[in-house]
Amino acid sequence: MLPSDLIKYKRNSQKIIALTAWDSISGSLAEQSDADLVLIGDSLAMVCLGYKSTLPITLDNMIYHANAVSRGFTKEIEKQPLIVCDMPFLTYHCGEDKAVEYAGKIIQNTHAKAVKIEGSEPEIQSVISRLIRMGIPVMGHIGLTPQNYLNLGFKKQGKDLESQEKIKREAFTLEKLGCFSIVLEHIPELLAKEIQKNLKIPTIGIGAGNFCDGQVRVTADLLGLNDDHPPFCSPIIEGKNLLKDKLKEWVASERLN
Ligand code: KIV
Image 1 (cartoon, helix red, strand yellow):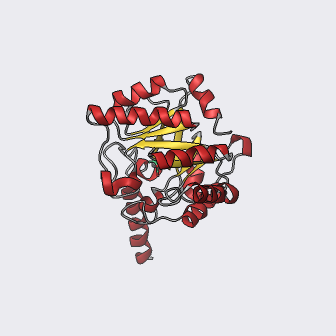
Image 2 (spheres, rainbow, N blue to C red):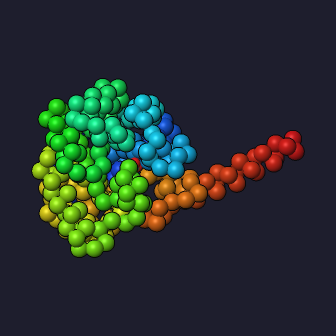
Image 3 (cartoon, protein in one colour):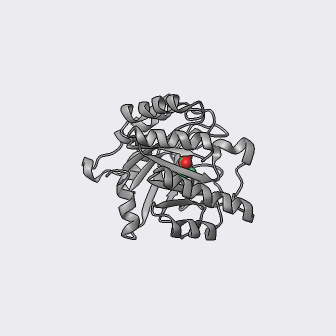
């Protein structure tokens, strides 16, 4: 599947389901659960590497984890999910040339067919359009953008009319620049609905209600593998507790043997 195929999903009203992955086990789980898209999200800095934010993760870290994820895939190539890899903090903030070099490294050294970039400030717009012209598909990401948490916090965005108008403008700009889809994170459901209705490219929501063209979740949050999870992602199982209890049982029983 190519990134542009996601636009056909929207045209056919076919919902897009995306999961994050960070190693071969989570990659295998995401692939075997038939997700359409696997995102190597920089959230792996927090959910897998124990950092307090996504800022410390590097380009080399992302490439290393992206390759671990695809090693977990076992389906024949045409049936594998589309891989999209996040560009980490500071890899697209220092000019177009550097961004092309770093995005190119992701595309050349992993199985990702696209990169995801947070924000839509003018500097970022020029990076996005250059990457697309150079043959590197880009997924946008607006609303709560965790790489900007020092300015915005990890809070819901688009709470007042002015910021809602801004988010709408950003979405239209990203579509015009040629992004093949946009992640809408932690914004009001009705705002996401309006954006979804007015764009030709698919919106993929997380904490943005049910009207997006697709949904993406951080798999570790969904499986309850961490002590904390964001308010908009209720775990479907208490994975950490379940696994911990089973391991405790095993350790205790082995002590008696
Ligand atoms: O890094 C990530 O996992 C993401 C998702 C929250 C969309 O960007």
